[in-house]
Length: 332
Image (cartoon, rainbow, N blue to C red; front, side, top):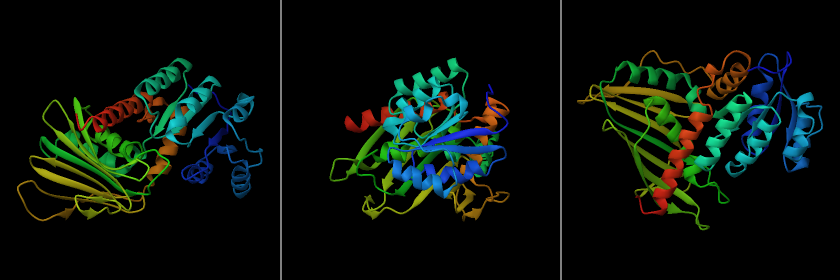
């Protein structure tokens, strides 16, 4: 799997919101160096390159970044808008790069599947940045579900609320939805048979900004999903800033709430009682740093470090595509 020098040389494409957050994290990993940046706004790329003392002149296109890439790069980070992911990821794979793609992997299940298969054929790591799947708290919750500590699962809910609106897209389904769907698949370890999703509110330009729906599973589990952007309202109440997951079993109910900076987990008896902090949880990890580390380890050590590979990413995109269809067909 590995094709890299002693130093893993990384190029980052997209310097809007997410790309600059990744630069210091990858720079901080042993024997990893961000050696070149790329953004359509060359002035921005030059400014950020200077900020992080990146000596290689920045590129303003994937073609420029990947020209003679094998001499300069081992991996590419794609942090551009979702509708560009397929083209950028395909180009990087064709150039022989390992790649880390911001969520979602693509915006159609066909594109996502093609990328997954292409990475397999090229024997390259395709890592989708579903960051919550690398949160140590989520790992502990998944283990509780697998061990049956909550009793047989009854229902679950996933709320991703309060992200900044994106009037130019993607809509809330493709912006916040990947977090909710990936978390659901990761924690439960099973895939839904059907989904019903309703659009509740739209921005002036027709961009979906608040949505709710349900994922239905074979064993009777129903997962409720609520998505909403900052400034909107849900069922008459202003939308708060929250990422919240509730796992309800026959014996216990566990609730996760927070973000990367502040997280907590509490538990109560399914038959009633007060909420109590769930003991034994540690919150000193940084999920995004853990994701970056997992990507590097997937290249250097073993693909098993990649929990969110092309296959997983394709499952997420397929569910989001079904949700999009459902919204446009009145919840069908």
